[in-house]
Amino acid sequence: MNNSGEILKHILKHDITSPSPLTFSFLAPNIKGLDSANAILAQYPTAFETETQRFATSTATETPRGPHKPALEIAVFAAATESFSQKNLNCSIATSLERFGEVIRAAKDADLRVRAYISVVLGCPFEGYDVNPHRVAEIATDFLEMGADEIALGDTTGMGTAPRTKDLLNCLRKAGIRNEDIAMHFHDTYGQALVNTAVALEHGIRTFDSSVGGLGGCPYSPGASGNVATEDMVYFLESLGMDTGVDLDAVADIGAWITNEVGKPHGSSVGKAVLAARLRAQEVRTGDV
Amino acid sequence: MNNSGEILKHILKHDITSPSPLTFSFLAPNIKGLDSANAILAQYPTAFETETQRFATSTATETPRGPHKPALEIAVFAAATESFSQKNLNCSIATSLERFGEVIRAAKDADLRVRAYISVVLGCPFEGYDVNPHRVAEIATDFLEMGADEIALGDTTGMGTAPRTKDLLNCLRKAGIRNEDIAMHFHDTYGQALVNTAVALEHGIRTFDSSVGGLGGCPYSPGASGNVATEDMVYFLESLGMDTGVDLDAVADIGAWITNEVGKPHGSSVGKAVLAARLRAQEVRTGDV
Image (cartoon, rainbow over all chains, first blue to last red; front, side, top):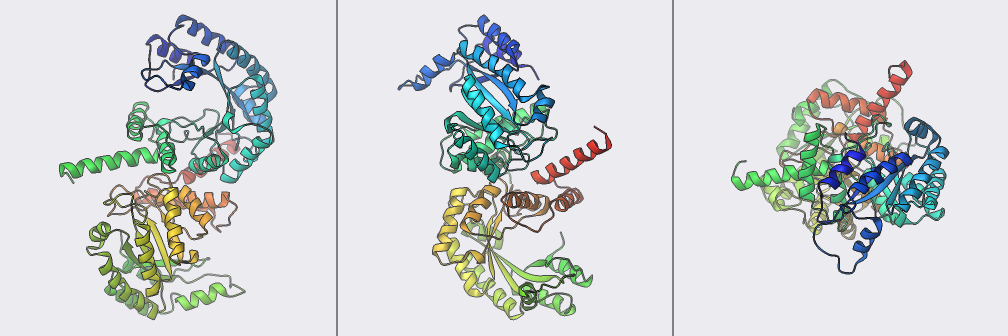
């Protein structure tokens, strides 16, 4: 896989725009990472939207139609357990937070949005199910105080269950963290991603990560399957009467294409079912049954 | 696949017993089917438990330990839509209910439990999403009046969503049908089986069908994937603090074995994740990482 820098350069160099506002996430593990992002941005100063520009666009009463330039956000990844932090980042949680504080402050100075991930919040490959939700709340509070714009709670191992998802979110609420500042990042390894999404929705969370075709995984969490598939997430949210703004048929096509391109199994039940249903409808129309 | 008669004969002939009470479901589409079941039972009169014997065993204050003889239940399958009834049974819903009435009364005369399935209750391959829940309630009422012991509501196509599952169950409640008489039979084609199970649990339903490794499907509902996997269902119910009495590790082994034997893809996220986690634990123990 190309690194964040190469991908960012490609997007900005080719002046890629989109009909909807899109954000590219740039992984910056330390201040050097952020410096390299800033160096690339300096080469293409008009090819992207800053946080201030994006915010102005998104809150304008008359949102202008037409192509949007990409926005950039800086992503930092901490862990909810010491074992995972050591294996993943080679340092303690406390040390990682010091480093990320530097990154976050520099990113905000550069008018860049920051998304702070906390991994293994509902189960750790090394410490098991009992991840302390109070520790997660502390790390989230630290991140927000450093200036992070959003906290993404990662169920990296897919070990999250409905009751523990509820407990975690209640714990964060009691710690004074607002729902608007939280995104849920579920993996579907144990098939619980949509159940846990339902719990988070009831709690008031409205931001959910997903990946087309269920691609992804985590190199530091062996056996973890991909993120919950975008196709499944969109189908579920729409079934609840929510408007995702996503064209499910188009995403199903992309999911089939990309999983084939990268040679990974297609990880979306909905994607496969949508494509199978379309094929049957075509067969019926052409009499080829 | 062998038919119900051959399987029943095999079970009774070999005097197969089990540590927990198990029931074999015998598909009887018409009175001839029931006659053939009765003919087989007459050959092995002491190899199975009748409904009265099973009920006496299960309600005894001191449940005797030790092997149980299998019980038999008669299964009849109606459909919630006229199109599905015509394609599946070659007759209207009304005609099918007349036939099933004869089967059910004869089964009760023979002291056999009856399970009445209603297919496509939350979506029909020919009529789409809008299956009339009032029609489902009427058919369920007819079945119960004929003497059926349990109604299994089949989401044959997996098109069920959380809100429509809730609507259906509310409609059945208003029609006077008790939760104790209802079993849910979800397919996971669109990944909604556990979400819909959560809705049904909240409503008070406590009986859920599933199949090991997610095997199954429906020959009359092209493209429909299997029933929700037993592994996924058990993991989910246990995560909610319920006691299923099922050994998840053992079921995961069976799921891997049976899907391999019949040459079908393994349809259980939990089954695969449990086996992968066990393998990693073994590698760690043997130092083979």
